[in-house]
Image (cartoon, rainbow, N blue to C red; front, side, top):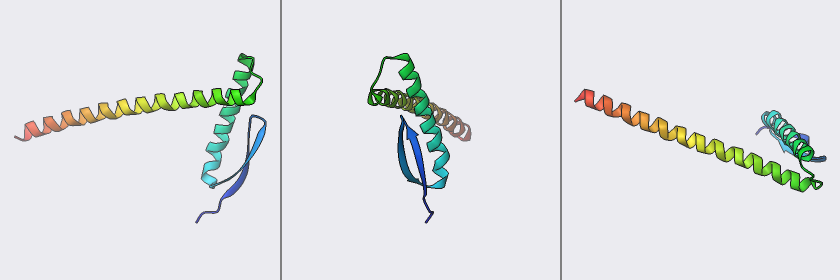
Length: 96
């Protein structure tokens, strides 16, 4: 079993200690950096004093991005499936 790495991630002026697998470190640090950057933009753009409100806005933004990507992925899967069905029909027709 892999040994876990203990790191500290700072989000919104709070430090969160985590035990993670070494291969997760880079993506977690990038995610924290992205969250902090988005928080800063919201704080500069809106008169928000409560960090929880800013974090909620960030969470909503990220969830929206994931939902949009999911729809794109589903549309791509449907498109690929339809093309494969068309190819399969062409092959079957040419074999008969």
